[in-house]
Length: 201
Image 1 (cartoon, one colour):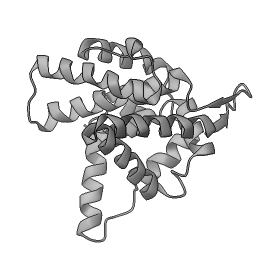
Image 2: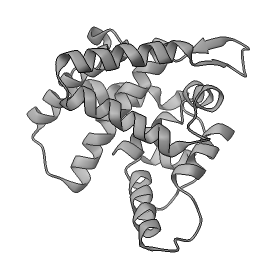
Image 3: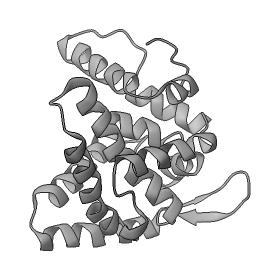
Image 4: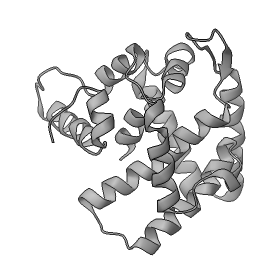
């Protein structure tokens, strides 16, 4: 589900351009993945003070991440509310898709509770939690409303090449990595998969 969320995030042109211009993801994807995992672990399993500190640190880092919109020439940073909301929303959305596909099965009430609880995570990254989706219906409606704004860009293609390399696996580790990557692609809805050029089901 996490890989699916990242692939979805990279289809937002302003998000992926920010990653390309201001992040170490392309130069060192393993480090970026490790730091992101540490943040997620801290806000999920750490105590309140640790979670609040992690959120404050992330907001400071985001304030220093700046990019130029190639279409408008505007400079912007990672604390832009629209970008924060897209990145935030894709995470519970993708994780719930993974649960639906592979289990364990969640009830409708459990899914709604999960989405509602993620508003705490939204606040930690700098989103007004009152504006974040409160349930699955609101989350799905938000994702659907964003579909016309998504696009396949050169930058998204470079991220896809890192996350879903086309090379033939040479050992068991690479086979497992390849299967997991294709599983992430498979969880994307048709519209997003087609933007990446994947037409298989």
